[in-house]
Length: 132
Ligand SMILES: [Zn+2]
Image 1 (cartoon, rainbow, N blue to C red):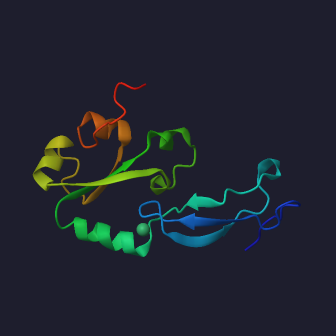
Image 2 (image 1 turned 180 degrees about the horizontal axis):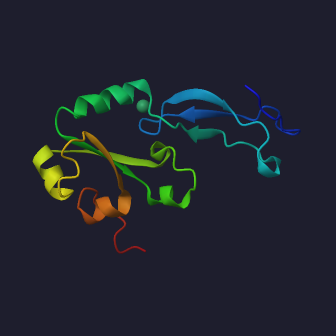
């Protein structure tokens, strides 16, 4: 691994956590960041932990797993990992999921869905409604 060291923060370490359960996962070395900034103490991992992955696989037997992600995901140019913006997980029976998505989920067991869309579809209740 080749990282540029920060003069001020050295390897500039951070700890990644599972975006679903919050469990600590790996040490991430950022090295020199733009403006020689200090890395955040914790960052969401690009993938959920093994325990959560197993749990999600289990849910797939019950229906289609909808992984709701924060709309901020779209503000980022690097869209390699929607997991970082994980909001909540919902299991919806296959027929209902197919109806909801016009058949898009027919051959899928897992889909990512925007929070705003999930709210409109009634998958996520919006406790903040009317507050903004
Ligand atoms: Zn986890």
